[in-house]
Amino acid sequence: SQQGEEDPQALSIQEGENATMNCSYKTSINNLQWYRQNSGRGLVHLILIRSNEREKHSGRLRVTLDTSKKSSSLLITASRAADTASYFCATDIGGYQKVTFGTGTKLQVIP
Amino acid sequence: DVKVTQSSRYLVKRTGEKVFLECVQDMDHENMFWYRQDPGLGLRLIYFSYDVKMKEKGDIPEGYSVSREKKERFSLILESASTNQTSMYLCASSSHGTGGEKLFFGSGTQLSVL
Image 1 (tube, helix red, strand yellow):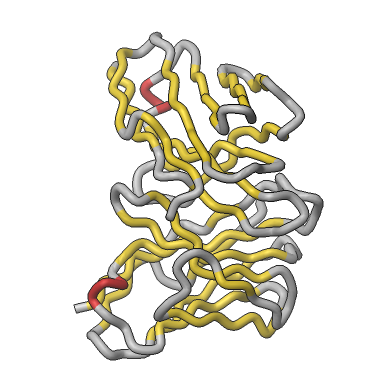
Image 2 (cartoon, one colour):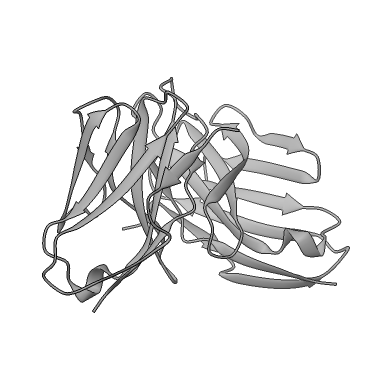
C-alpha cells in the first residue's frame, strides 16, 4: 500500500489564488520531499523538509510538517498557469535509501 | 546538465515477451530506482539499488527483476510481460547519504503490453 496519500486528488483554481495540497503518511519518517510532474514527464524535486523542522519556504512554496499527525502540506502562493502539474510527496526512513511516493494531487491553474 | 536517460519513450510488447527497460545516469549516483505510475495510484516502487550488484525489493516487485552490473546503469526486466504491466515506468537516481537526497528522474517509458 502507498506510504503517502495526497488530498485533494485534483484541484482547480484561478491564476493568482493560493493552492494548498496535503499529504498524509503512515509510518514515522526522517524526511519528506515534494516533487512536481508536468504532464507525462519525469518528476522534479521542489523542496525537502526534515522531521525536526516544522516549516520551510522556497520562493512561492511553503511546506509544513506535523509529525504528530503524520501529515504535510504544500502551499503555492500567487499561482500561475505554469504551476499546472501534478504534485507528489515522497518519504524516506533516513539512512535507508528506500523512497516512496504518495498518490499525487493534480493542480490546474486557470489563466 | 545532469541526466537520467531511459532508453525508450514508448514501447509496445506482446504478452509473454521478455522486456528490458534500460536506465542510465551520468551523475555517479549510488542509488537508482524503478517506479511504475498508474492513474489514481501515484508512483509505486518496484526495486531499488544502492550499489553495483546490490538490489532491494520495493513495494511491488512481483513479475519484475533488475540488474545493476555498472554504477551508471540500472535495468528493469519483465520476465514474461502481462497486460497488467501496461504502465508508465520511471527511473530515478540519487546520491548516497543520510536521507533526504534529491531524486533525479528520467522522462519515463510508456509500456503497452498487448
